[in-house]
Length: 361
Image (cartoon, rainbow, N blue to C red; front, side, top):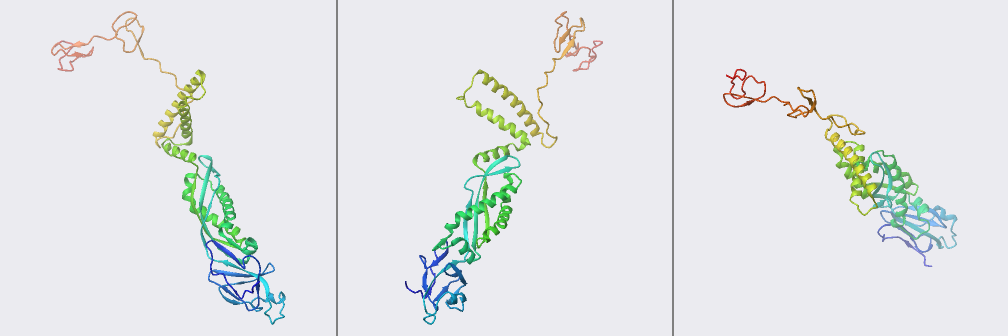
């Protein structure tokens, strides 16, 4: 095994967080070996599974001065030049942006208006290593390389769990959730801080791109918006029932007979009356509070009648002759002797020329 007199990692791969040198196994080092750490890196010197020191950017000479613990771990029979096995973990300290998160399955949300609905959410976050020694010891272990892809699923599950908890605390309608994404994102970033810190990481940004319901819920929202003029959820429920009846009527292939058809027609009439009342209440606007639809239709009004002046028989209003005695129910009009205009019975003057009718002049 060749002795490593120069330890460095100049070619950092995309998405790479940690690279061990040598990657496959421990390497041979000796006092005086040079360790080069570049900007944006930290190097953890490890021997026998124990982190001895963390080095920042610059060129470092391995010695018992900068790694005092080496004194008791290695022998010095060759004037301090005897080789010893160890490994160096190079940790990238840059910020990893555009890390994606999203709900694999819709999450249940209690909507203040629509009840229980399912929602999907997705977005991005950014993170960086805050404590290299904790991150390597807690997450990386003895792996030769560690990338964002290796930790992506785990961090995503942490994010989703916290997001679900936060969403359960928001008591509003999904119609208002989208405008609250900034507030929810701030809460998630604060809540996730401790979870990331335990891993030696820092969550530097958290964004919610969208919170969207499934297509069937979107259709309900569109219907609810279309019924906004009708006022409350009671009207919306009536509207939904009417739609269900319409869909059933448009499905002649379903099982049905004369009885079920009659029931459907009766339900349709009842819903029609309920919807008519709802529409009237809706278009009344804010002029008067909405009233509940009547439970049953009012009885039909009795037809108007009059009494025959001759025989006192009851006669339908508007009849010209009594069906009992045959007498005329309305007096004959008075004809003006001057202009011939027909005037109402009992008129004293002609409505056309003003001639007195009572005297004929």
